[in-house]
Amino acid sequence: MASITAIHHISLTVSEIDRSVTWYTDVLGLTKLMEEQHPDGSGYAVVLGKPDWSMCVGLHVHDTNKGEAFAETRTGLDHVSFLVASRAELDAWTDRLSDLGVVHSPVSDQEGYSVLVFRDPDNIQLELVSVG
Image 1 (cartoon, rainbow, N blue to C red):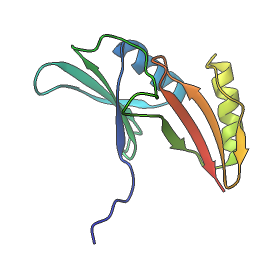
Image 2: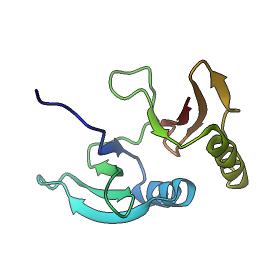
Image 3: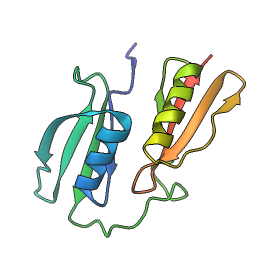
Image 4: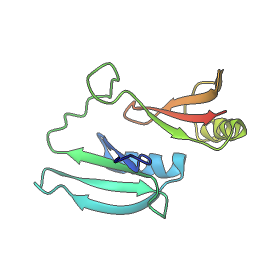
C-alpha cells in the first residue's frame, strides 16, 4: 500500500518576500536553499529550510497578491506547526522568541503535548509542539 512518511515542505504566500525571508531565517534559524521563478512568470519563491533539505518552507510572492493580512478563518491554511524534541525545547524557544521581540503565547501544556503559538509578519499562525 502507498504511504506518506512525513511532510517535506510547506509553501506560504507572503506580502513582502524580503521581510519574510529575513524573519524566517532570523527567528526560525532556517537557511536559504534556493530561489525560483514561477513557471508562468507570475511571481517567484525563496525556499528556506534545513541544509539537508529534510524540512523546507517555501515563501512565495504572486503578482496578483493584494497584500492583505492572513486570516485562518478563510478557506485554506489555518496554521503551521513545527515539532520540537522536548518540552524543555519549548522553554528555550520561549526565551528566543522573547529575545527577538516576537509576540507569543505562553507554553500551553495539554494532555499528551505542549504548544507555543506565535505569528509571522503576515499574521500566519505558527506553532511549536512537543509530544509526550
